[in-house]
Image 1 (cartoon, rainbow, N blue to C red):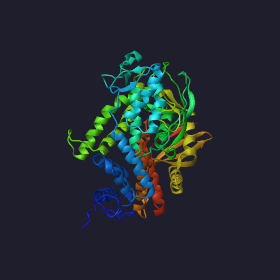
Image 2: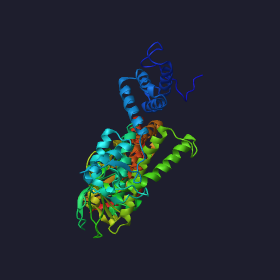
Image 3: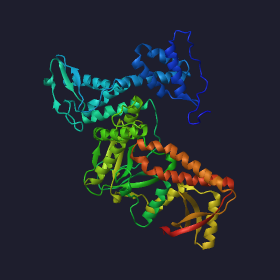
Image 4: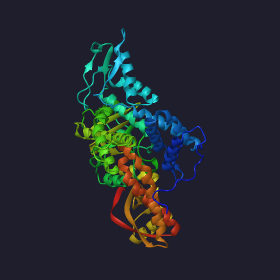
Length: 536
């Protein structure tokens, strides 16, 4: 009987060479085993095949290429190309040496060499020893000079610190031992993790909130825009109408701060379709200069966080694999550890930035992302603050209401009809001008004068349901879709994490409505609390 937990491999896409060919019988048998193990249910596990080929080639160097060719003859052309690239990556990573400020490289020093020329040779040797691809070696050599001010460094005795500065007089017998700075060590680890990610690529998705900030750190407010989820917009509206600060930095998920994009369009965490754009002003009310973070500072923090992150990930991998602390891990497990440790170290890096800003005198920080490893798609700048009084919504509650009315998620006609029925029953003065879905609630906007409004928050109660399953199926589908798309945001930086759970709620609510329209669900709106007074 077939085991449903281990699907049977489908017939080969292309037949393997027969034993009558020039292929060794043992190679054919190994190729058949690898293909059967890593190709099933229409999916080809190219990464798994690459590790298997590399393992076999390590034990049988003269037959490694023959095995790869035998496997490739059974794959589709795209998978053949992917397998060739993956095998090359795995074999290159097998030769990689440890990365860190304590690990040096021996660089040749010829008469007439300058420190700059010796450094250039050292950069390429460091990158090659780290097992980087030729493209990554060239990128490290391009970026590294900005991270050491042209100074030679010896290996450090402490992996958490960079080694002492030296000069060419330290050369012995025509060689000098150089080590990366802390920032260069972080850059090498980040590039190595990206190389490993090419074996199992996953692209984070999303967009950011954005507001410009005064470049001189002055006290005057700077106009701009911020993107928030509908739920946050509704809470901001109530806060502003009650004279409270619109944002709560102390509730931040990445340090007790609020993050904003102040310039450019850096790659970030969640989709624009899950946001409401709010005009705001930001000021540095402390009069103290903001903390500044550039590429060097970020990479130094990342490098410090990496070792502990790798240790934590290795423990998880060992527990999952059922291996003790002294049992060897597979090459695939080791590369998984390094990829995951890089993501964890980056998240901890952003958290440390936020915490440092919260502890600073100004409570304001700026992160410059120019040709940055942490924003590969575009340049930009983040401004973050731990002080709620630094952020003001332009136009106050009226301005925020206009944004919600113009960009909010409008409720379907049935909900709007229920809102009008509710207004008539309650004898509300004025006219219902709109109803907007915000998470699991409905905001009902009632115009009571030329520039005055009351905003009622209502819960929609199901009164009659023809077929309830349709609505909840829609909600599950919508919420599940958002969650699966947003999940990679945990690897990309601070701007997407806060909105992730809220986005799941919001898309689930809209999904409920979409499914329920089909099944003709009828709602009865029930007002909660006191209305928000705007204008007048």
